[in-house]
Amino acid sequence: MTRRSSLLTGVLAFAAMIVTVMQTQAVPILGLIATKLHVSTTSVSWVTTATLLSAAVFTPLLGRIGDLYGRKPTLLGTLVIAAIGSVVSATAGSLGVLLAGRTLQGVATAIFPLALSVLRDEIPAERLHGAMAIVSGTLAFGGGIGLVTTGLLTQGSDPGYHVVFWFTAGLAVVALALAAIVVPATGTRHPGSVDLPGAITLGGALILLLLPISQGHEWGWTSAATLGCFGGAIVMAALWVLIERRSAAPLVDLEMFTHRPVLFTNLSGVFIGFAMFLLFMGVSYLAQMPARIAGYGFTASILRASVEYLLPSTIASMLAAPLGGLLVGRIGGRYVLALSGIVGAAGFARMALAHEATGTVITASVVVGIAISFAYAAMPALIAASVPHRHNGVANGINSISRTVGSALGSAVITTLLTAKLLPHLPLPQEGQFTVAFWVGAGTCAATIAAALLGLRPQTRSATTEPAASQLVSAVG
Image 1 (cartoon, one colour):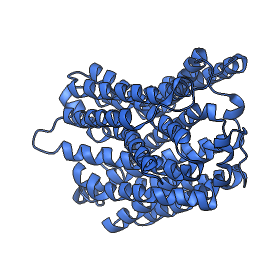
Image 2 (cartoon, rainbow, N blue to C red):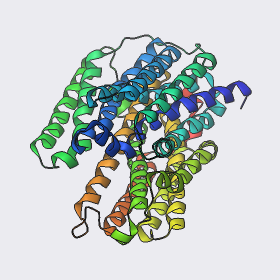
Image 3 (cartoon, rainbow, N blue to C red):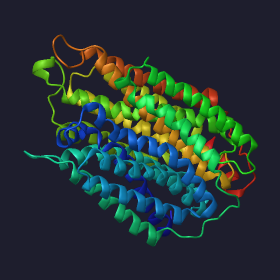
Image 4 (cartoon, rainbow, N blue to C red):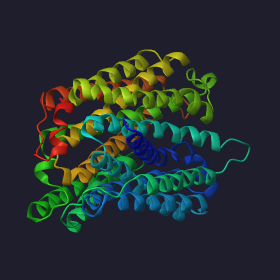
């Protein structure tokens, strides 16, 4: 890879890392925020939900805006909003202000599809899958870094949450400066307009889907609110399809959306997002279980759980990203995606069968981290070879949302599992619930194998004759 390409890839990878740092940084300190702001556990859960819902609305919309009006200005604008959201969160003295900041931070999720679109514009086809793999690999790395830095920044006798958001504000400002200097403004702008009715109905459908997923354990999975939201999501999705079919310039080309490679790649995105959050939260909770009281676990602090138990898997994910890109070029995205499922299932199965020793848990989580990195390397290549260049931003935006949906599901499922069966007279989960959770992770990875080998055809044919897509066909297998 040339020096210019390497520099561009590095800057975009750093920018993409911010996405998952912002998503995960608040997870370990929800209890701290609730204490500092004197709010209930139920109320403080909106700190993560607000970011999730914001991402669902703005990611496909900003991907489309980038396709139409230029990737660099859209990327820089998104980084500005992410920085402002971080500053608002860092200075918040009430839950309402903090939620406003976290909503603005959720817009940062669009950085990833915009970064991939810039790569597709600027990187030669023979190097593109490797560059995409590196940028994608930073997502898993960023998720772990968000947890680790939060643990480091909230040490001391009187920890505060403000410094955590100042940290991401600094990251966003650095990324903004680097992107302004390094990212060229030479990408192709495609004709068309923003389909606002389509954006509104798609955003509404995603909000009504993600809201009960993220809040279901608080509301009750069979409550009127939960079932009503799921029903509303179905109605809104049907309305969205109707609008898109009648639109002269739809936000999402439905034929592209249901195109077999895109459909099964997005389904795999749900599985991988699920596995990543289940890994992070499952291992973190297990490490923090008080061994003398619960009879299992490692009595780790938030910091130790993050650094000792989670950091190795995030580092492994980052180091495995270039290998994933190389494998995509050698054996194809379909087989790399299947390989990620095999490796991930093995890692989760190992944790399900034996999680009494620190070394076993760390080693197994490293294996799963590598699997996630391989999947992240494969999915952008599969998307890039399957959609026209003019739809690249929105297609990757939808794929990002599929992982967001999976992450929300993973968070909800493990929360539900770990509160379903508690130890007698203690508010702690029975050890068997962790075993069940890790088996669920293994099953999700196995589903990725099925999606890759049964859902994706041996050779993905592009839906267009545009050079950038046709040159990638050989790279996705």
